[in-house]
Amino acid sequence: MKRLTERVYGILTAASFINAYVVLQADAGITLVDTGMNAAFAQTITHSLAQIGKTLADVRHIFITHCHYDHIGGLAAVQAQTNAVTYAHAADAPVIRGEMPAPMPPLESLTGINRFIRTRYQPVKTAPARVDVLVEDGQALPEIAADARVMFLGGHSLGQCGLWLADEQTLIGGDVLINTPFGLRMPIRVFSPDWQMAQASARRVNELGIKTLCLGHGAPLVGNAGEAVARFIRRLG
Ligand SMILES: [Zn+2]
Ligand SMILES: [Zn+2]
Image 1 (cartoon, rainbow, N blue to C red):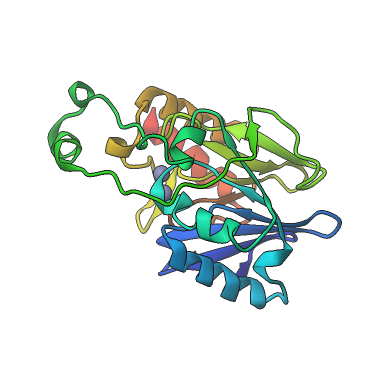
Image 2: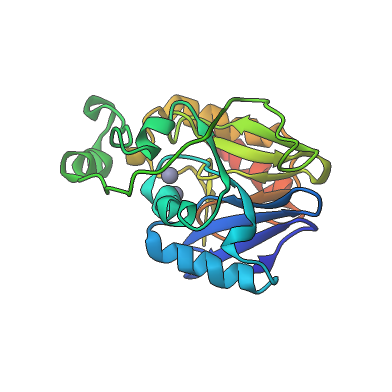
C-alpha cells in the first residue's frame, strides 16, 4: 500500500492496472474506496491494511465509485468481514445489488472496435452486495471526513461518483479518466453508457482546482494533477 497524501493510501495492484484506495481519518476510522474485481481482492485489501496495522474489521465505510465489476467484484467478500456502511449512487445501486447488468451504450451510438466489442461482450457477474446509503452530488459525508463530499461524475456509469476531499484538493474519481502510459485518457467508450455525460464529467474534474487525482486505472497523480487534467481537457476540445 502506498501513502499518497496525508490521509489517502493507494492499493495499487499489478502495476496500477486496478486500484482501490483507503482514506484514513483519525476520528472517523477507515474508508475503503472500491473493492477490486473479485473475492480474491478482499485478500489484497487485507494484506494492504496489515501494512498500517489495520484489518478489514477496522473499515467503517465503503465508498463505491461505480458499478463496474472491476470496482465491486470484491464488495460482497469485504462486506462479509466488516460491519462497514456501503455508499453508492442510486443509478448504480441495482447493478451492485445484482438486480441488473451494468448498462452499456446503445449499439447504434458505437462504431468500429467499440461496436464490435458491444455485440460480443458478456457482462461479468459479480456476487450481489449491499448498498446501505444512496449518495448524490454535493452530499457531505462528515462520517468519512469533515471535508468529504460526493462529486457526481456520471457517464462512464450512469451513477459514477467521486469522493472529493476538499481541504487537500484530492479526488478519488473512479474511471472518470484513466491514466495510461501515454497520459490521461477518457475511459473505454464501450463501457460508458452516456458518452456526452462522461465528457462533461471529465471537464468537471478540470474545474475543481485539483491537486491529487486517484483513478481506478493507472498511477495516481499526486500534487500536480491539475496541470495534467487541464492539458488533457484542452486536447479534448
Ligand atoms: Zn468502469
Ligand atoms: Zn474500472
